[in-house]
Length: 291
Image 1 (tube, one colour):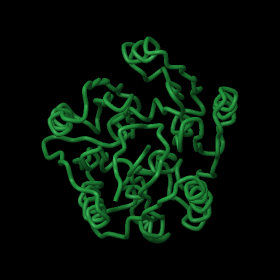
Image 2 (spheres, helix red, strand yellow):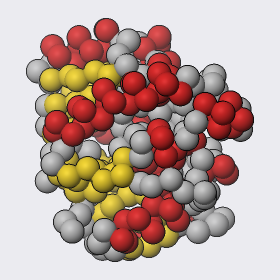
Image 3 (tube, helix red, strand yellow):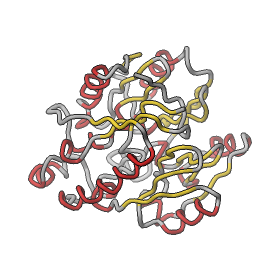
Image 4 (cartoon, helix red, strand yellow):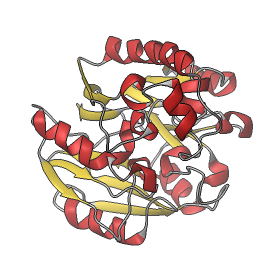
């Protein structure tokens, strides 16, 4: 099994998904649990399936190896967002202690499955440390930015640094704003999505000045998302390979800006699948290998 994903833009060779049938399970389950997971509303299960089929086809058209997490009693609705429970380095997977309590079982379920297909474990974040995958962004193969917010704390960051010290040269800790409060999902990758070499969609209103200046000084092109489209996951784009990305339908301005920058954009309908759970294209994928 080939693995290693210290990049946000390298071509995805293998990816881990979880279909809604195994995460959401049924309309009855959604109605019982959506408030517990702080969703914007109760998703329509049948529409979720239809939307996911479109998203899944885009992934399968571009990624050679697609793996699926099975249903697991330790996980809940958010397990459809496979990105957050771990990151996979060249030396193995690092599993996180989730800052959102109902997600605490996800890393264990993911580890059991990934071990079964040949991905070794490099380490684990343990309490009182917390860390979520949406806060861990590879600037390049040896540089990682980590959002310090309500889902990721100082102890989690310290542990991650210790676990990955042999594969990372530079860590950039990015303080996250309060935003809409501790119950709202605001990760570092809520405000920046790389889509090509040194090119990213950003929401600068929530980006610390020093980090924005750092990227600009490194020669990055930053494509600004407006307030309305940010609220509709307009900064949550998955890079399939350099210059090709996936975006939720309904963000015409950022879609045009990205296309005008020379990047190909594939879109999927995601009002029920993504918007209500605040998890876009990146959130629904855990790349196992990028090259």
